[in-house]
Every structure is written in C-alpha cells, then in structure tokens.
Length: 321
Length: 153
Image 1 (cartoon, chains in turn blue, cyan):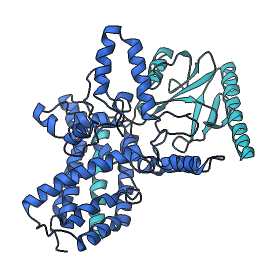
Image 2 (cartoon, rainbow over the protein chains, first blue to last red; image 1 turned 180 degrees about the horizontal axis):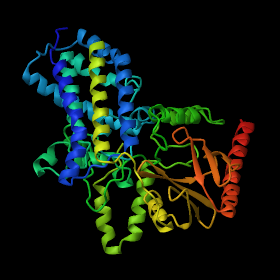
Image 3 (cartoon, rainbow over the protein chains, first blue to last red; image 1 turned 180 degrees about the vertical axis):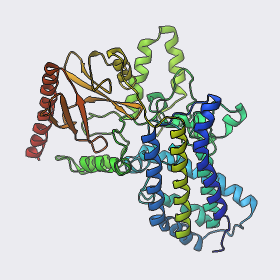
Image 4 (cartoon, one colour; image 1 turned 60 degrees about the vertical axis):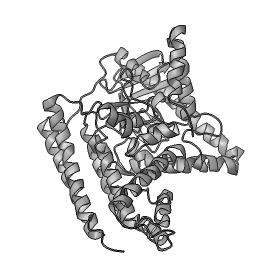
C-alpha cells in the first residue's frame, strides 16, 4: 500500500483542534459565550482520551487488517482521486450514521459508546472522551465493505479521519445556530447538542457525523427547541470521575445482568444485545417508555387545544429502530 | 505506529496543560455548587424525575439531599457531582450497605460500579438515626432479595 503522506497533516490538525479547548474557555469569558467547564470533568475527559488512544493503538490493526484484507479482494479498481475521495467521504458518513445508530440501540455496542455520553457537560473537551473498546465490539467491520467495493484503504482512512475531525467542533454551546442552509445539510453544534441530551424527547436522535440529511432521511432528526434546553449526560448519570469506571461501567452492569439467576438464554441474549433499558421484568425504562411518559406528562400539562400540536411535534421525533 | 501514538499522546498532554492553565487563570479550579434550601433540592431532583414530590432533608452543607417520596414509600437521593447533580430513586438492590458508625455521617455503598459509594453528613442526631434506619432497611431488603434469587436458582 502506498504511503498516503497525510498522517502528519492529520496530527497537526488534531493538535490545533486541541488548542481550541482553552480558546473556547477564554473566548467564552471575554465574549460572554456559553462554555461550562468543571475541572474534575475536564480532567476525566482528557484521561479517558489517553486511554482511548492507547487502546486504538493496541487494537487498531483489527481495523486496518480488515480493510486491507477486503481491499486485496476488491471488486472494482477505483483510482485514488479527488472525485473518488468525495464519493468515499459521503459513503463513509453513511456508514458512520448506521454505526452510530447501532451504537445507541443495542446494549453491547452502547457499552462502548456510552463513555462519550457520560459527561454532564457539553464542551470541546467532551469530544475527546471516547471509548476504549471501539475496536473490540466488532462494529469496525462496517468499514470493510467500502474497501471490498474498491476504495483504497488510505482514502477510507482519510475520510474516517476527516469525519472525526469535523465532529470535534460540534461539541460546544458557544455556537448557537448557523445559517439555515448550513443547518439543513450539515451536522452542527445545535443538532449535536440534541444528540447528547438526556431529555426524553431528545433521546436516540441526530446520529449524523457530517451530513444531518441522513437523520432526516431515516427519521431520526429532532431539532433543538429553545424552550427545552438540553440536559447533558445519561438517563442514569455516573457518580465517579474515575476513568476506568467511566470506560467500563456498562460492561460490569451487563455482566451482573448476565449472571442473574433464573433467566432463559433468550433473556440473557436480550440483556446483551437488546436496547439499553431493556429488562426481563420490566423494572427498567427504555427510551420508548421514557418518551411515552414524557409525552403523557406534556399532554396533562397542556390545555386540550394545544395537545394536538404537541402530538404533531412528537411525530417529528419518531421512535424508529 | 509508535510515532503516531507518541504524537497523539503529546497532543493530549498539551491539551491537559492548556486546560489547567486556563482554568487556573479563570479561578474555576473549584466549583461550589450548593443547595440553598429544600425547594432548590426538589427543583434539582425534578429535572430528572419531573413528577417527584415529598419532603426534603438537606445534608452535607447543601451538597446532598435525601427525599421522602410518595409519603415515605420511596427514597430519593440528590448528590453533587462536580458542579452538576446526580438524582436517583433508591430502589431495593441499589444499596449494598449503609454504615452510620461515625457520628453525624452515613456511608452508603451502592451496588453500582458507576457510582460505588457516597458519604452523607447529617449533624442532627435524630435525623441521622431516622435516615440511617431507612437506608439500612433498604440495604437489608437488597441482600434478602439477592439471597432469595440465589435460593430460587
């Protein structure tokens, strides 16, 4: 495989992006923009980030190995050119949408991705609070089809890197809304704030990486409502800043559920792969139940005339799986 | 691969140093979020459990609150975490142990790897005893349930 020669540029860009973290805090103070940082939370984010880089380095060969193997058996000879890069970038973003959606809708994958959502803050440092086990879940195999079709592994890796770098700046409250045309096509801080919110009406929405059109196309788009500010974090928030606990807590919870006595094999598999919040005795609340309860609460709180409008708004946030 | 790892690790280190510098400069190193009164505690609890109602006991100089929900049938706990709050309705199975041997202090151990323990300071001896009794009863219920589950297995 030829040396793509862009790795140094990606690293340099990453360095510049990290410098935006202190810049966000400084500018927020001077320009009165919103940026809330807590020292313990920020340090937890950065420490978790180091762990995620370490494990990516240790297990990254699974990603590269899978893609390289598939490319060795590719179907088409697609040249490494600007047009093929644009094409693979869009296709990789579609791949990202489904990777992200699965990561939220199945507990085995959620156990890995929950790390990124477990901060109650929303600032640039949260963007580097990433999973330690992303190579371990098996979802990296979703990159393989692009290589098998015939896109060069270096082009796929570049598209993947640019996608992740794009998402860095989404993690901020300092930017309110961008021009309407941009909000319509691209993922923005506003759309991604909704994705990180634990308010029932915002749960399981806005999975996009770069193009928000995927959410609109597949029925998972929910706009940010100024009347309901996002509450960041999990439905059941963590009480620790310990990076090891942050990175592994959902796996421990899964293990406890799996050894629960008197469960059938199907129930044990459901604890592993069903949606987060599933339980064999109905004692926990899934997203569907939380949203139904929230909708009922809104109906009770609203006059009858406004209830219909509320139901119409709710249809904008479907519970498709 | 090593080069890439070192490069990224240096980037992260740089980020940590930069954050610390800016936080120190802005005197945000310590957060001091407190509950002023029981109304504030209930309001904070309701952001997570909107239908909650009950009586509130502020503990730990406003860093935590215990709530008697549904006329005492359920217990709510609000705990400061950094400059945010964690709200939980404590159910059987959630508390592993409640220890009140230290005067004015209740140490709770949770059966939750994501929130292993917390410490509640209640200076009033009567309230300390009341809450300790309730929390220990919940912990005992947890261990009974676990034993019962195992015996059925």
